[in-house]
Length: 137
Image (cartoon, rainbow, N blue to C red):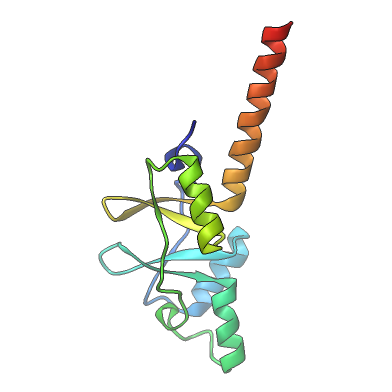
């Protein structure tokens, strides 16, 4: 029906692994998002930093001047841009994550959040219902 490429956000807000935590927090607040992909010097995905990861900073008494690499999650689960929506849904369910980087040849090309998938499924179901109603009438 549709793929990760069809529902991903292509204007991805992210940080570098050597950015400060303060920069990551500022970006999250400004863009009203709960996590950011973290890129290394070559532009490859190095991790994800989320609000949950930043709780470690609070609990450890860390400073916002610390580096993102100190607090990011390194276990990154991503999807390929051509993965179908069922595979994307299964990844969200099995890994219990809020967002998934979308990759092409190992490079970040977008991000898909759970709400993106939910919106796409809702819209597809509405479209099917409208077609069925139209065909029945």
